[in-house]
Image (cartoon, rainbow, N blue to C red; front, side, top):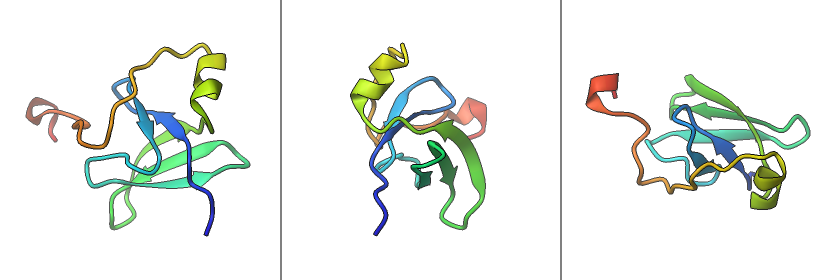
Length: 81
């Protein structure tokens, strides 16, 4: 099984774990390309992001985003979610 561990920035500027993106979404991770594809369970692409392998990598990139867990919603009803 491929290593899918890492972090990415969501469309609201929050830091999320690739293993628990929330919202019923799944993450496809390309570690070589440092790419994260966030998809629905049926495979529809909803977000693309840069993969940060560790929290230290996030810090080195100068990012100070809040780390949230999968229970945090991706959007609001007003935003269409």
